Length: 201
Image (tube, rainbow, N blue to C red; front, side, top):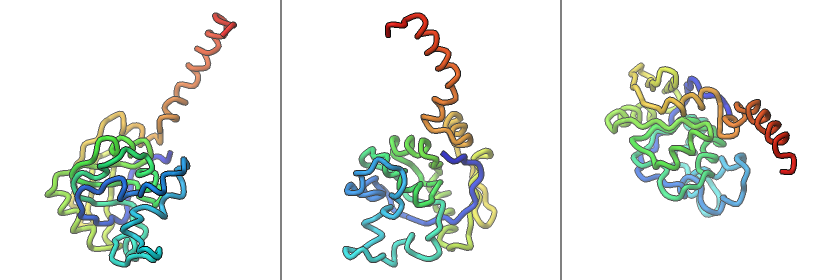
């Protein structure tokens, strides 16, 4: 997992509430267990018509936002089923930060496990960020996880809260496997002792 420290990038405005995991990645794309390749189907039913042509009014199909790394969204982002494919698709598209007034709990936790920083801010601050994002590709926001700040293109700064352990994992690029591997030496020592004490196992 990539380390997350400071991100400066384009923010895509998605002023919708209750964006659920089926909207993020529809169920027909859940057959794979690979984390890669899902970005093309992110928000599939909003991005494409029945003939697989891009819908030009959808924000990520607009030239200004094709390289967005941040999403500014409405309340209750990531609600619905607990599919981990949702953060996989977001990350594979290239988005590493989602900012919204609130998140579904399971989606929120899955984001941290997949290198995505979910930031919850009050609605009035979301409104400011949404307007800033609507300026297009020239308006770049900066997210600093060490300082726990989001800075608009005009220099307005908002502080956010993040769990200290999850912050550590993102900054060090540690998913669940990475956390386990930090203890590899202790695990090897335990296994060697167990083999000596119980050779029949």
